[in-house]
Image (tube, rainbow, N blue to C red):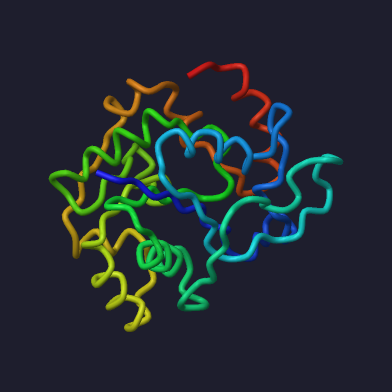
Length: 206
C-alpha cells in the first residue's frame, strides 16, 4: 500500500482574519512544519490543496510560505472541504490518501498510519468521537472519487454526508486513545481562542 498526504489549506479563515493558519507557531515551529515532519515519515508524497492565506502576525522567520510543498488548486472552486478532498484524491498517486486540515498541529504519524491500514476493508477510515466524525484527519481511497464528484455536481457539499455513499471504518475514542490524548491529537485552530488554548494542550504528552 502506498500513501499520499494532502494538506487542505482551508477556506477563507474568517474567524482568523483570513490568515494562513498553517504558518501559526506552536511550540517553536509552524503548524505546517510540524505536519510535514509527521507526514513525511509515512507518505511518499505531500501536497497542499488550495492557496494558503496571508501570514501576517506569524513569528518572524517562521514558515510564512509553504516552501517545498507542491500546490494544487481546487478543481471545483467553492466546493468546500468536500471539493478539497475530491481534488486531493484526483491528484494523489498513492493507493490511500491521508487528508488533513492545515490547522492541526499535533498530527500523529502512528495514528495516520493506522487510519490508512484501516482502509484495507473500507473506502475511508475516519476518527469518530463524542463530537462526531473528524473527516479532515482521515484516510481515503480512490473509491471515494466518484461519490464525491456526484455530490459536488449536485451541490451537496456536507462532508460527512459522503459517508452515506461509501464504506466507512469509524475509529472510535477507545481505539484513538492508543495513540495518545484524543483531544490533543485532533485539536485544530479555528479561532484565536483555540490558538491560545493550545498552550494548555502542549503540557500534555501523547
